[in-house]
Image: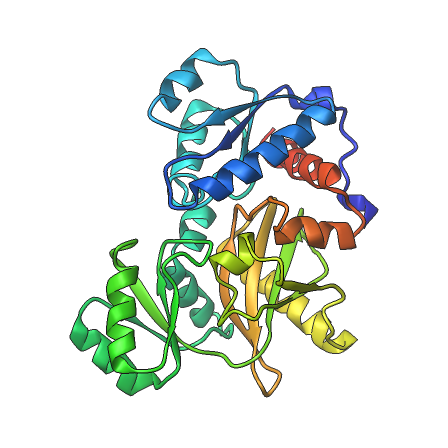
Length: 314
């Protein structure tokens, strides 16, 4: 996939602000991702500097010369359309998806509703706002189930449950992170993650973990998580998975780069879970792994993401 590589002179990007950190629950991951991106840009000859997005961000926007922004803010405040809207108002081109796609993908419930309306497969779900909702969901969906805050990433606040009491406790815990909590049917089978880069679907990765599911620890801390590339599917099923990912990302309206998470059940059917519009870029992250399998090292991946912002936003 050599067509993914940027052919632009690093000087063509101008002065690039790498936006990292922020105030979301994913701050620590964002700091790791952002610093890795910043180092890669600098080593490539790009005039880049970092901004840890905090209370002084508006004054930094006013005082710094910024020709372009590389958004590496995970979670709310950076991945949900708010930063994208601010940069649009400031007239600063930026990487990744626009306002609408960012806001939609950050909202797991709305994303599922869009997919469902288009006939794309996503697990059955319910919204939890009370103990009565928990009991009703248990009756309607059965067990096991997985509970998720609707607007968090990195598996924060998620839990697998096998009974009503566990469901109520998990809902109460998830509600500490988000006023809107989802519960989904548990899909028995392997999990895959598939990255999109500049309109191309990168090689899928099959995930393996001894944890109950691919949780925060498995994503960022554990040394026993397995990443299988090739993913082990036959050619026809892999192409089916890639096409489903393409359709799912197009439905949300993603741009530049993204990563979709998909489960496969015992009958071989695929089920869409969510789309991340600012995926992780740490040493445990999945998009860099998929890019390597497609022939791009980390620096080439970062430059490709940045180049897309030139082509799409000037």
